[in-house]
Amino acid sequence: MAYRNKTYIAFDGDNDMHYYRLMTAWKANDGFSLNFNNAHDLNTARDSSQEESIKRQLRERFANSKLLVVLIGANTKYLTKFVKWELEVALRLGLPIIGVNLNNSRKIDDRCPSTIRDQLVVYTSFNHNIIEHAMDHWPTNFQNLRSAGTTGPHFYNDDVYRRLGL
Image 1 (cartoon, rainbow, N blue to C red):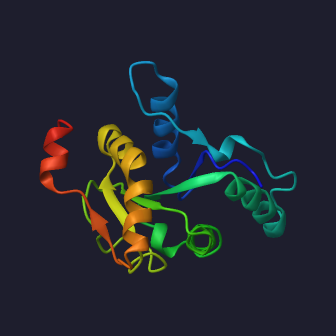
Image 2: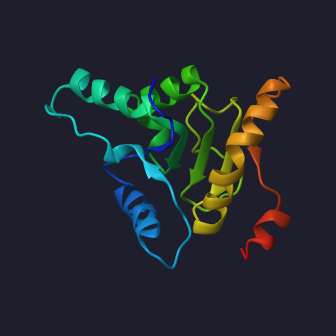
Image 3: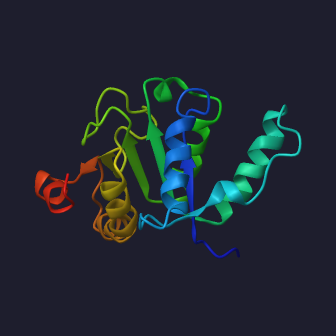
């Protein structure tokens, strides 16, 4: 069994790549404390034109992932080929999911993909501090809530954002 220490990031590669790149820049910059082992660094599909080839590589990434972060942009809920599939795999594997709203909403909103709308997912705005907080705390909270039979969307209250300087 693979050691699960990676963070899998799902996003709209056509429209939201700059948000993904900003997260990887935060990770690389010594001035930021955001730290994650990016599952996307593990491999690259050899034949990126074939859906099954891509999904095979994504499954390898999932095998090493402990958490999924989904960047939720204007079109994310309409992406059924890969993002929906990635969310379904994460749910099947029981991975904690953090929904990061690119419109700065701090809660679930109408951009949320239907696949995770009623699931145990925490939602945040797109900001370094709250994403880092969620990555540090949500996996444990998720496991505790799931063990207690809790379902449905979650979010951090305004006090958490204030404490983080937001």
